[in-house]
Image 1 (cartoon, rainbow, N blue to C red):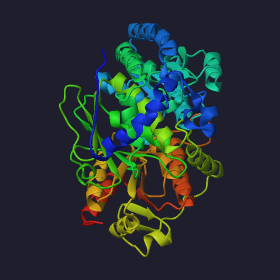
Image 2 (cartoon, rainbow, N blue to C red):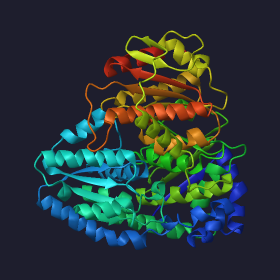
Image 3 (tube, one colour):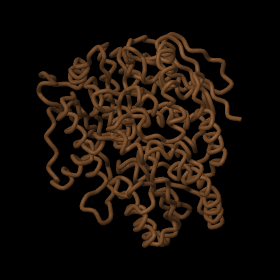
Image 4 (spheres, helix red, strand yellow):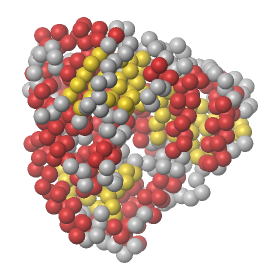
Length: 538
C-alpha cells in the first residue's frame, strides 16, 4: 500500500484551510479523475483536452514493461550494458531521478557543451546503447546528440542502427524516420501527456528500465496514489499540496524545495521543471528554488518564500513556520506533484499545460546560428573572465567584483537571482557552490541551472513569470569542439548561440543580464569564486 504524508504550517496551512473546501465543493478531484479539460478555464480547454493522460498512465505504460525487459536482456546478451540518454527537460530529468534513486547507472546527456558531448562519446562505445527521447524529434539538442553518436558508432565499426533506441510520440516525424532507418527499437509514448508530466510514460520508463531500475514498482505506486487522489474529500493530499503551492495570500511565489534525506536522489530538480514550466506565465507563477538543508532561503523567513521539505517516509519531521513537509516513495511523489501542480494552476488562473515563452529562446538561437555573427566584443576583460552587459547595468564597472555588485544592485525586495551555467556539469560541478554563497550575500532566493537544460524548465518562468529576476550567465571557452554531422554548425557554436539567444530574449523582456565568459574554465571559475568573497554582502 502506498504511503504518503503531508503536513503544513503557517501560511501554507492557511492556504489549505482557505482553498481545499472550495476545491472539494467544485469536485476538482473527481473531475481530474475524469480528465475534465474545463478545470482551468476556457482559454486552457483546448490544450488541456489533449494533455491529461498522465492521470491514468497504466493503459499506455503497462504494455511497455515486458518490451523494455526483453530488450534489456537482448542487449545484455550482446554485452551492451551502458545506457546513454539523449533528451531534454522532462525527457531527461525523470529518468535521471528514477535511476539515481534506484542506484543504477544511466549516462544523461542533456547538454550541448562540447566537453560534455566529448566525454559521453569517449566512454566505451562498444558496450553503449543510445536512447533518444523526443516527442517530435525536432529538439535541436537531441537531434544533434543522435547525429554525433550515430557517426561515432559507424566510425567505430559498430552498426549504428542496432545501438539506437527511440522514444517518441506515435506518428511524429521522428517516429517515421526511426522506423525507416531501422533503429533497434521504437517506443511510442502516450501523445496526450506533455513532456514535464511524462515521468510515468515511455519517456521515463524506457531509459530507466533499460538501465535496470524497477519500473513496475514505480508504476504500481503511482497507480495506487492516483486512486487515493481521486477522493473528493478535504483530506485529499493532492488538493492540500496544490493549495499550499498556489494559494497563499499574498502569494509566496518562491517555492524553496529542500531534500532532507528522502532517498529520492535529485527529486527537487525534477519538481523544479514541473512547477516552473507549468506555472510561470502571464506575469505570475511559482519559482522553484532547489536548496540545501539550512540554506539562507530556508532560515531567512522572507515573506515571499514557502519552504517545502522532502522527507523520508519514516521521518517524523514537522513543518516549522511557513513550511510544508512531504514524504512518500518516488512513484507516489511523482503522481502527487503532477496532480498538485495542476491544482495550483487552477488557483493561479493559468494553463498548466502550455509553455508559451520557451520557444522564444529557441528562435533567437536559430537566428544566430543561421546568421553566424561574430561574437559581440566584451564590455571589458578582467583576468580570465570576459564581462558583457549593457552600459546601464554595468554603470561604469571595470572589474569582475564591480560588475557583480552592479547586477546584485538590481535585486528588488521581492527579487531573485538566477545563475545559468552553460558548461560541463560534471567537470565544473563546483560552480553549484556559488548558489548558497550568493544567497547569503544577497539575502534573496538564488536558483542555479545548467544550460541549456534549464531553458526547458525555469526558462519559462524567467520570461513568462513576474519581472523580479536578475540573471548571471556563465559560459566558457572549450579546448575542443565536436562537429555535428550533417549540420553547418558545431556543438560549440550551438551552445554559444543558445546562451546568446537566451540573453537576448531576457534583455528584450527588460531583465538585467550579466554575461561572464571564462576564457580558461578552471582559472575563470576560481576567479569568479574569489570575486564573490570580495562582495561582502549585497
